[in-house]
Length: 387
Image 1 (tube, rainbow, N blue to C red):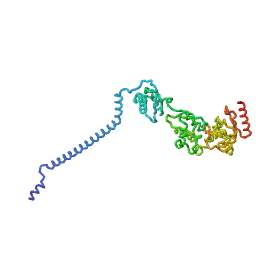
Image 2 (cartoon, rainbow, N blue to C red):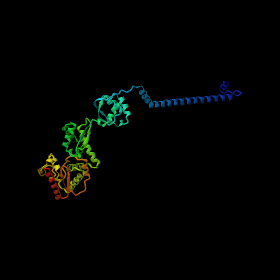
Image 3 (cartoon, helix red, strand yellow):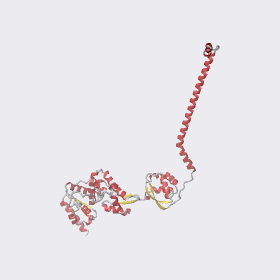
């Protein structure tokens, strides 16, 4: 039994080269295994390459596909509907800030100005100036050719705006009357709006009083602008002017108050700078300002109707014949020239000034009271010559 088992477990190597055959067989198996590994690597590389090719192609298609579709669509779409013109009637349309050509075209097409959004978009793209179209409300004709609609939006004369000019030297009540007459908004609505000083942006240093803070200028208001927005625009302009000149918030009210006096007392820029200096010279020595315009403001009457009794006996804080220092508020909206005159007054020793010709506004300045009396005599002579 032991020999039998030994015979099956340990076989003697056959004679005649059996070892070389085993070696060749092992080599073939090794080469076969290597071929199988190479095939596997080749298949993996092919799969990876194919995946990259598919992925890259997808990315390219994502980029180029829409352009191809647009080109295909533009070739297949019929000519965009457009009006032949010349147009008729009118309609107001509003172009919002930041609107694209397509968005403008949609608004105009819905309003009946152009025949189609596509026609306007193409006309917009064909006009190199179209990017300059400003937001706002425009009055345009109905049934316009798209190219003409683009041109109409570039013409600022088609803007629907309310332009209000506020002259220098007006008081708040006069400004509100002017605003109301031009915008047709009742004065009461402006007064209601002004009660909310936070909404209008009136600075705290104004003490709730708008006098002097409604800047004299020309304003353009779009349709639908509220009374609050109009007042806020005027206050903001005053703040802007003062900030540009470096006026500190705590000095704003004083600058506006002196500038309002200067505005009402002199006409030319040169005279305004001299009056500003004379006022400051008086303030420096606690001398009363004796300004008629302030007395008239306190009495709510025109300066031309002011009497000597008014200046001598009226008891309001604006009677600068009775009280030294500045009035409690500005008395009017000063001009930019008057503000600059206060910030950079002329050099001079003057304490007195008087307008000796009310037609031309000629003003004489004096350092002494005696010289001032001579100038007043010139005024009396002019008045006598007027009959």
